[in-house]
Length: 93
Image (cartoon, rainbow, N blue to C red; front, top):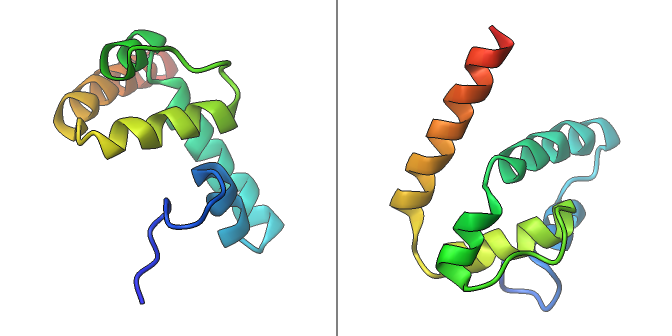
């Protein structure tokens, strides 16, 4: 049986949290998820969803991102994310 992140009647973020049992693994993956979601500007959400997330909290960003994902906006989103990621890597180097 294949379980999709949107199958259960809770938020996508709650499904993510519930799927990771080890606290250290959760901390690590949660920080990666937060980093990824923080790279997506509010303008992108507004462009695809016609609204911005309620806040920049991980739960709200994850819900908005899964809604974008449901609209199949992968290519444009990926390109913009890669551009933001390259900016961060240049700053860190």
